[in-house]
Amino acid sequence: MAKVGKQFKAAYEKVDRTRTYDPREALALAKELSFTKFDGTVEVHLRTGLDPRQADQQVRDVVVLPHGLGKTVRVLVFAQGEGAQLARDGGADYVADDDEWIKKIQDGFTDFDVAIATPDMMGKAGRLGRVLGPRGLMPNPKAGTVVPAEDLPRVIQESKAGRVEFRLDKTANIHSPIGKVSFDLDKLYENLVALMDGVRKAKPSGAKGNYIRRITISTTMGPGIKIDPLTSQNLKVAE
Image (cartoon, rainbow, N blue to C red):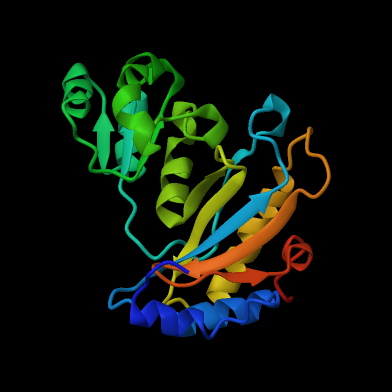
């Protein structure tokens, strides 16, 4: 193992590497082993059996976590006219409705977590690809962030409440946060259920063999804890 700190080593040694954990047990252990002074993020990492090079094996979707992510989400909306007013009324933190805003973002303003656009503004928003793309902020229909003006209030509120995007990366993995270490175990579990349900529904038509091969839960700077992929793909919240 590469050189690591004493706190990480102590946490790592408390994880049984020879077994897969029950999801609730894994979440409880992840909370217990978190050693950061700040409120760390609980993350889920999925190893898939997909081939990212194939067009029919792509995964990209969104899910609304029932208990959110435990952080303030700043939303910027590209809209004009009636859409701009709907965005303001819907709670958007910023409304980019003119060329001055486009220039401001081109000059480096990215003080927001989610960008949403109406279709008629994508021509202008598209000019910001070099700024927004690398940061994962570019509005995209597949991610549900390019929507008609009348849908803006709903999408804005979902984004602020815990709407997260998940997607397949170039190494065939999917990564997503599901909350904070300070969350109650039940809330983390219910967020995990929502994420896994969304991933299951997003299974691409070209998937072959095992869709999800490995699932690991970790916290910020904490060790990974493996959970049973078969059990986790069929999680349900108790009635």
